Image 1: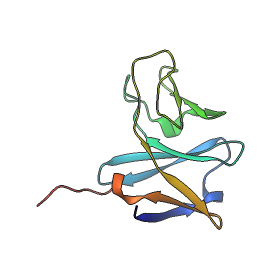
Image 2: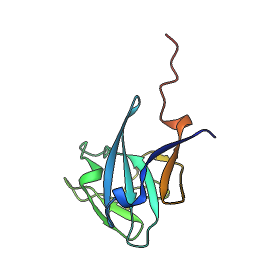
Image 3: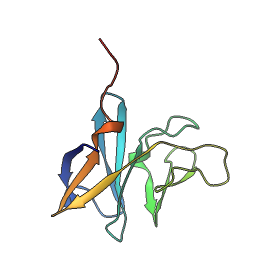
Image 4: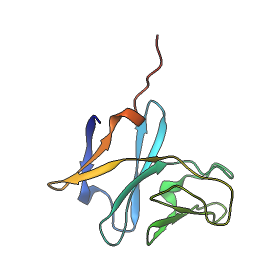
Length: 109
């Protein structure tokens, strides 16, 4: 894996998120009340809701548009046959790192 330093852990509010713009689209980076961090697609597959604006509870986020709930670890929607992409993260010395392999544009010119 190739890791990219994206922010300080404290840049992400507790029970909140921040948006990371990439060549593949926006990624939501979440921080739980227990200081766990997760990265997922920012777009809800139901109606395109911005998940970074959703409510973080436990290891889940609720879409702000239509209340679909997604597991932040697996990306699976509760009670629905749908999921969002997830991305590997790690925290080292107060910094959040994301695996670059899933977020860089790999198409040939």
